[in-house]
Image (cartoon, rainbow, N blue to C red; front, side, top):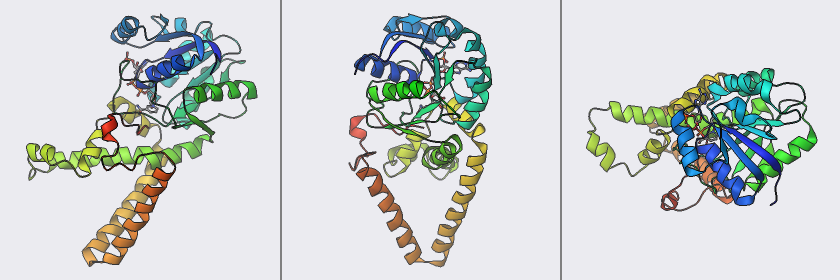
Length: 310
Ligand code: NAP
């Protein structure tokens, strides 16, 4: 891959930004990387580690002269960041984001961007439960999907460049409409996180199960829930607050399904349970066949880096 942008600016230097920086360097996708983060601590780490070529004190300074600006902050912070950088963007620049929710980000960011700037939201479907500038790695996006979610009419040249940028970082790229994105992601990522948070909360509440037993015997299922439930609290608070409609819709359906299974168990309806679990097993096989997970019995834990994502 060769250089796509001259200067790329990252606002927010956590897991996703640092992974993009490593992946972008691996493929030589930009000449200069500028970056900034909210706290002095994160900026100091970025300087110390040489994460960016230039670390600025403010977002306004970071975006000056940038051809691509990537917003990598929690969904609830996107609007305020856009308001800060809006007046300082280079004409013709592309602004993108990596937020896990798209409609709310489009509504929050769009109004702050001046004429002549291309706003092309995106969402990489890759992540881990870790956060911060030292949690990123170049392989995070390899063979994972990044959804490009245009908010209306976009310049086809700017769109093609952003697609090439993500492909250069190892991703498979698809475009999707914002509301559809929010519903699909609610099913595939957001609701499972909510269920994991709840399940771990339930185990914590069950005084019958001592702490040591929960930890010692957490092999089956529960351990995966605890990993998901360790995800960043700010990020996930913002995901649910900004994807309320889809959350309500999917939670309603989830509760109906749960009650169906509850009824089958109460009535001893083994056929229903067997058919249900046979169907869900086929869904798991489909994911493995699509190359989006491993069939290893340990869920690929040996690789030490899960790429569940949000
Ligand atoms: P992260 O590791 O927690 O990093 C977040 C960054 O945003 C940090 O640099 C933080 O600055 C900065 N930040 C936090 N609150 C801010 C505020 N109010 N104003 C300005 N900056 C702020 O998060 P991440 O996992 O990279 O997530 C970033 C975005 O990617 C989120 O929108 C998330 O929805 C999306 N995403 C996450 C995943 C995932 O699995 N983690 C996957 C796909 C997409 P400090 O370090 O100074 O606090």
